[in-house]
Image (cartoon, rainbow, N blue to C red):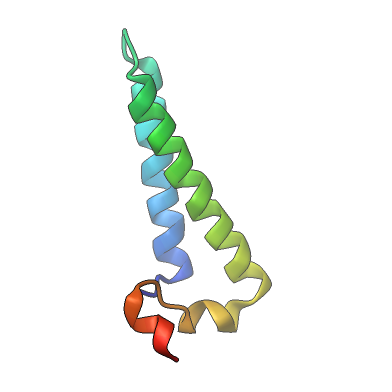
Length: 69
């Protein structure tokens, strides 16, 4: 699955908003918060990789189908 830069930025913003909402709750769910932060960090790593090698980001695919070639 290949995601474009704008798509990754949008998903990052959505995750950040969810993180902030969870933090503002009376009793934040720490496990949910940790998962959201982890997802956002992985997404930010992907964004960083795309910014260093934009051509590679278009051809990367995650999943078993990409292992063959």
